[in-house]
Image (cartoon, rainbow over all chains, first blue to last red; front, side, top):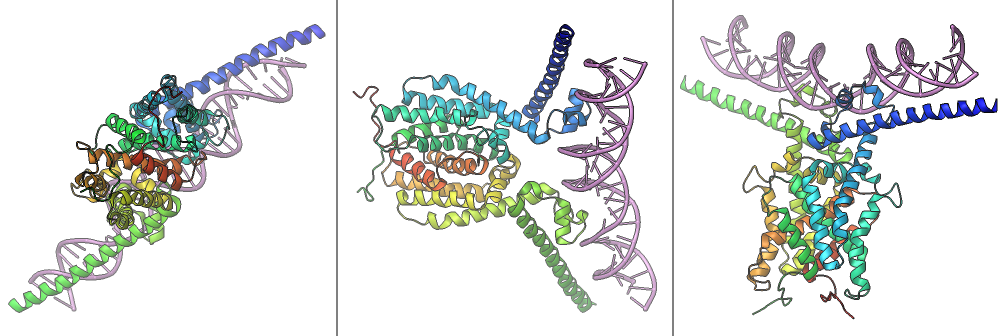
Length: 222
Length: 222
DNA sequence: CTGGTTTATGAACACCGTTCGGTGAACACC
DNA sequence: GGTGTTCACCGAACGGTGTTCATAAACCAG
């Protein structure tokens, strides 16, 4: 009886494991397919029916794995953000903060321009999506990657190279706004012909660091 | 006969004028209603059917005045941009460029946060929409308002207060990216709790102008 | 083999943007 | 005044969307 029970238990577990695995596999396949469609045609072009067609299931089946379309978007959001984080990682390793800063900025902008649809999904689609990255989990990927930016200024501050009382978090947020602005404008206002994003990134960083080049504060200089 | 034809002509004109006027009025009413719906519930919630209901016409009638939904969006885009321009106008009048700069930035950010749905429509919805503001007309409202930003740095440069060879257009674009980034992040990443937008704007401007506060360039400061 | 649980689905609902053929009223001409 | 024409307007339809639900099939435990 006890033995039988153990056997049944182990068999159950094997079957349950396999089922669980298959379930996770299908979920993964759905996400992979969805990701491909979003990267190719943008999130707006991702329809549940086309997605179901692509994975060769009925549309209703998708709802056994995701609450709705937005849940898929959220998941893709998280994964896209992880990719962004991965791109930032190498730059974050640079020791000198003043060297690290332009590298981070450059990597960020490059990611945005090279993965436009992913970037749009993460940062430009819906406020509810980025919530999954920031508000939901306290130590989620969102705050963690923001921490990378903050660290630049913390390091500068701790080395006594920045004025005391300066707030690293504010500087980081401004930097973030700057690089995001560059990416967002390039992605959205394609009609406006400005300088290349790389140049702008350089100008942004160097101006943030050193201020306006050769600025004379006097009102009248003559 | 001649008189009759003149009379007919004048009557025709009167009728034609009235027709034209009524046509323009309806078009305007559609746009006003659409604008209200967008400002209240966002562009995504604007449907041709609801819009038709609101103006008390059949959906098909809307297509007698606009090619499609996107054409309405484009028109709303242009009008929203004019509002933005109007908000920027007073700040643009400030004489001292170094005083004008923070005022422009402040006005811009304020507009974005006070008119979130309008701002989203203009700058975050679709690349095709902003095309109507920039690429389409060479001296349209888009380039004109960008010129306001450029002017700040042109003035500084012409007064000899900026290093020669500095490119005002690039600085203006960076500034634009900065304020746009602040607005966009606040609108989209509402889950992320950062500093208030006004503070960020101040930090952005002062950092762009003066550089990092008290920065020491030496790698080792001890 | 039986009963119950999980998994998948077809059909439906309520929307959406857009098109098209028809209708009726206002107009122009004789 | 009668007649032909133009034109704003609309009902209905097409093909699409996200989502739900009852039904059926597959599976597995006892």
